[in-house]
Length: 302
Image (cartoon, rainbow, N blue to C red; front, side):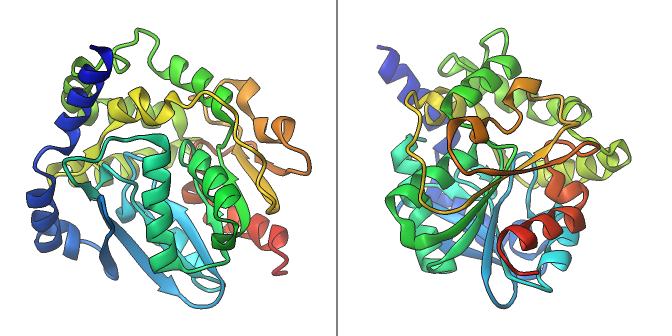
């Protein structure tokens, strides 16, 4: 019964996916930001932005962030890289088919299809938060897609189990159906609290909130309950990919316990680390120039 309820809960976040895809392609998300594109895979219509030229680096939007807040990052990185910023399945404006189930391998395989089609081979994966699990898995199983991993607020599966428990202490989001309904109701109200907890440079919070509020008004998704219940139910630690790994950490992020900082370096050998004491959960957005310098040094571009 629990499996059935979990599947039904996920359907709340994916219902009417094909019609939603058409609305997004022809509505505000298609024109709100220059150079936005859509790419359809088997289960997802990804919304992404591409700018610059040269070596490819791929950033994943960390919801409730959408592409709209990535302008300064794109401007900084596009001077050195071909930059791709993509919204994850069921998040932002990346709509899914109705049969998408938020499974760990299912999601990673579909994201890998996007990367293969759009980014090509040999990209730098600059994935953030829970998406770092996808980066580790994809890079290990499909090593041709990634040359380096520059992972932001990243950890292994156990670190994210701790993070998930801390962010949902009452277990509301963990309950199928109830969690999805609660998230749909709470999402717009949760943003100021989330940014207040996670952002290091507090003067940027009003801008982040305004962008998120605008995106929600135009139908942005934040399928956090389904991600908690299914995608982040991965139990085993992932094997270490062969690629070089950089762990980027914003120490002013109060959404993670201190013990999660650079947990990748304790889990795997040879992980380089860089810490920004005054930056939070999305250091690449709070100070893109600092993160750019760290990644250029890591990738051997300086």
